Image (cartoon, rainbow, N blue to C red):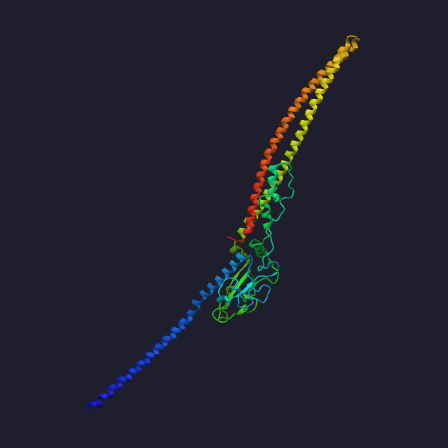
Length: 406
C-alpha cells in the first residue's frame, strides 16, 4: 500500500521537469529572436563606416595618381582593374593601376573626358606665360670684349644653365593639367558630355571631375548607378537604394591637389623671369650707348689732336711769313712794313689757336676717360643683371619642372 502511494509522487515530479524544460526552450528561443533582430538592426550602422572608409581610400589613391602621372586615371573595363583609356563603356575603378587590392574591384568609377576638359590625359605645355622663349633674341654681339662675351655666353649656350632650362620647358606635368582643371572649374556653361551626377528628386545635376560609387550592403548598384551615369553623392538611403558614392568637383579637386597655390607660384616666377629679361635688354642698350660714347670720345680726341697739329702748322707758316716780311721790309716802302705787322699778328693768332686746340685735346682726353669709366661700370652692372636673369629663369624653370611634386 505504501509502495503504491509513492509511485504517483515520482511521476508528478518527472512531469514537472519536462514543463520546465519546455518553458526554458521557449525563453531561449524568444531571446534568440530578439538577438537576431537586434543584430539585423545594427548591421547597417556597422557596415556604413567601413564602406565610406573604402571610398575614402579609393579617393586618396585617385588623387595620388594625379600627383604621380599629371592626370586622372581612366576607368577600367573589367574587374581586372587595368585602365581602359578610350573605352567609353568602362565604368569600373582601375584598382590595379592605383595600387589597391582586388577588394576594390566592385567599385564603379567615372572621370570627366569631355573635349578640352579631358582630365584623363596629360595635356600639352600650357603654363602661361610660357618659358619656352628664345631669350637670346636681340642680344648684341660684343667683339673683343671677354667679360661681356662671357656674360652673353650664358644666354647663347656656351656656358651656364639658361639654354638647358629653356629646353626643359617642353616637358608636361601636373601644372599643365591644373590649367585644364581650373578652366573646367571656371566654365559656367561646360559643354555637353561632361561628367555629371543627377539628383533623382528634381533632375538637377552637378559637374564632377571624378566619382566613385559603392553598391552598398546588398552588393547591387541601383538608381542611376546602373549604367554610365551616376547618382547624386549623398542620395538618401531607402529600402530600394543603398548605394554610397563620393564625388569630387573640379574646384574641390583643384584645392585638394594644391593647383591654385602652385600655379600662382609658377606664374609669379615666370613673370619675374620676364621682368629680369626685360631689365637685361634695357641695360644692354644702355651699355651699347656707353660703347658708342667711347667711340665718339675717341673720334673727338683724334679730331682735337688733328686740330693741335694744324694749329701748330699755322703757327709755323705765320712765323715764316712774318720773318720773310721783316727781311724784305728794309728795302720797301711803308706798305711793306704794314704787311710785316699783319704777318706778326697772324702768327700771334695762330699761337692762340694752338692753345685753344691744346685745351680741346685735354678736354677730349678727359671725356674719353670718363666714357671708358662709365662703360666699365655699365658692363659690370649688365653682367650682374644677366646673372639675376639667369637665376630668375632657372628658378621658374625648376618650378615648372617640379609640377605638383612636393
